[in-house]
Length: 314
Image (cartoon, rainbow, N blue to C red; front, side):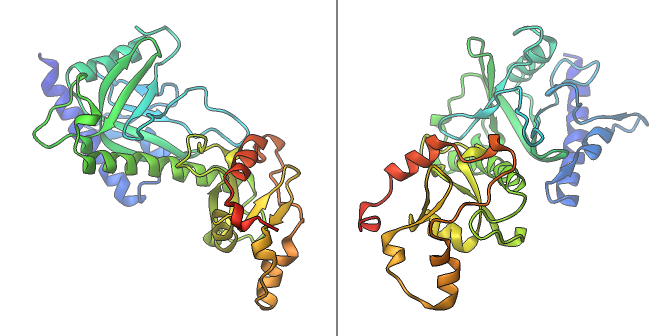
């Protein structure tokens, strides 16, 4: 296995550079830095990933070094179906489609799995900005669904080696929870960027225009199977309206008008309360200009079905 020493040196240098970039950019790494790559000491720079491929294998090496998930520009969709597994502990990463299961990129990830080699995962937070997770290990290859399964290194104990027979349910709860947090945080950061961009960085209910006060609120909570990080399942809300929305004191009808619960309408608490809430009743939302990004009826209706009846009793 003559490749092993070269591979170890390559990964060590690449990982060290990514860790440096994580510190410099608070893990919001510009694509230019990823593309600029790293030096192995021979005066030749190698990229950490490439624009052309989601799976990156350095020339002359049999195993992939990194994978990436791109954040599409507003109004566009991602051509790949990279997603979290149902338990939230692992990443399901789509094959490089062109060329089929035995495309060289797919073979390079399979090689990394067979030889238990750590990878770098670049996740697009917004166009041109990436968060890095390392190490990631390939632990599964599903040819039927044409996807690989990867887990963050924290799922594995320090004395364990990842293999394709490793099962996440065998991991202690604290490590599975740690992996869930890492992967979920990436998707939440991406969701926030997409939602705030769609609403032109305004609260959908009061139109306040300060990012420091804005949240990306789920219409159907992410704890629900329907609560996916889809822009159409999101609203840009200021902290005050987000809190009331999460407590079902405020809702939205299918015509995108704000509804206050009878419980909230009965309250009186001075001019600030009146302006923030009572004057909003039956008023239209501030909506995305792109109609494809507006709240979907299926999410609004699912939310109404889950409303606490005691709050909405006249």
